[in-house]
Image (tube, rainbow, N blue to C red; front, top):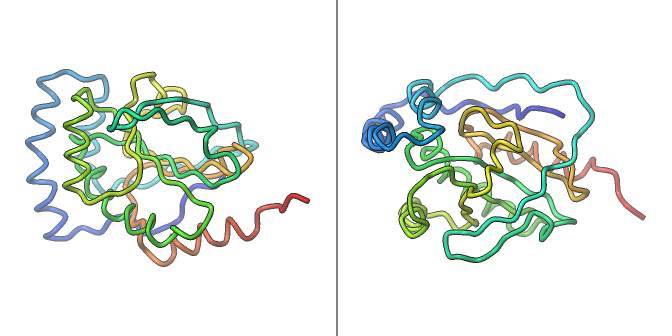
Length: 202
């Protein structure tokens, strides 16, 4: 299972400013005591952490799930069988997560004519309506789901952001730990190549 190979988010005044603004969300989350807070704070401080190397294993089946999105609609992974599914675990209090969301949206728009679906699974304890508003302010159009069933644990997520790609057969074929420049041409090429080289069914 390959790990994503793309430039990490660059250090820049813009990135630093965004992380500074989002520090408030981290403080609020610490007070709330959510289960991912400690790692979330570490992620905010280590916005440019390197991706963890992928394990040398056969592509495993993606853990199935059914969750509600921020609009109350039920969404199941099996709804997208036959498509490539991009699954991103994130939270509003995680600085790097929020920084990469608009970049994910750009990738989503680039791939809109492909058999490609993007899902963002929120680990927030906040009410869905608040996360819906947060996502709206970020300008994202892809589905945002609420992790009310510990799906992150099923995927072995220990820190966020964490991203997984599930192929049309329901297997996890790629993963990434940490934020990425999802709109980078190299990243788009990564997905195009993966789709083109995938075994074709008769």
